[in-house]
Length: 149
Image 1 (tube, rainbow, N blue to C red):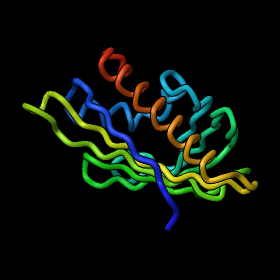
Image 2 (cartoon, helix red, strand yellow; image 1 turned 180 degrees about the vertical axis):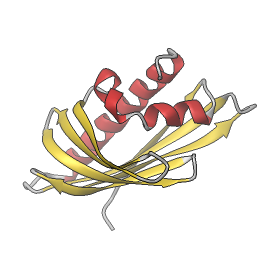
Image 3 (cartoon, rainbow, N blue to C red; image 1 turned 30 degrees about the vertical axis):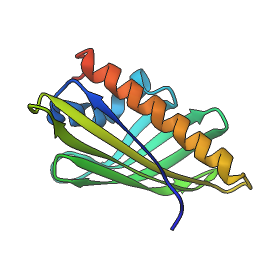
Image 4 (cartoon, one colour; image 1 turned 90 degrees about the horizontal axis):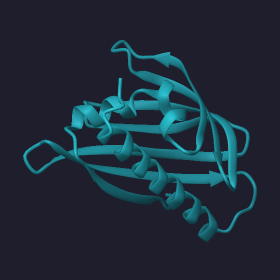
């Protein structure tokens, strides 16, 4: 199995508030530094995104790709790569756990990136870490500012 990178952050909001921001793909360009465009291509019977096209610019990794999403209850979402121009794999997940009295949430983001062009493992892990750290910081700021829909 490919190596992955993982990190966690505590957000001052209930898990449902955090998940509502994670699930609102149309607004990703507003708070994620790397996602420049997001388009939901398919939804499940509960109205949650099943396939999303994302235009990503993460410095060393620039790509137009489609991800398939799997929702596990209301506390976890994972994704796998469907198609991409430069990526061989982009698999990840957000896992949410109530913290304290339930008004805080620990969010764990796990990510595995594999590119089609040769790249040192150390550089891939660094890119994963940058993507995760920016995503978690952006998510925390977005949720705690009350800017969700």
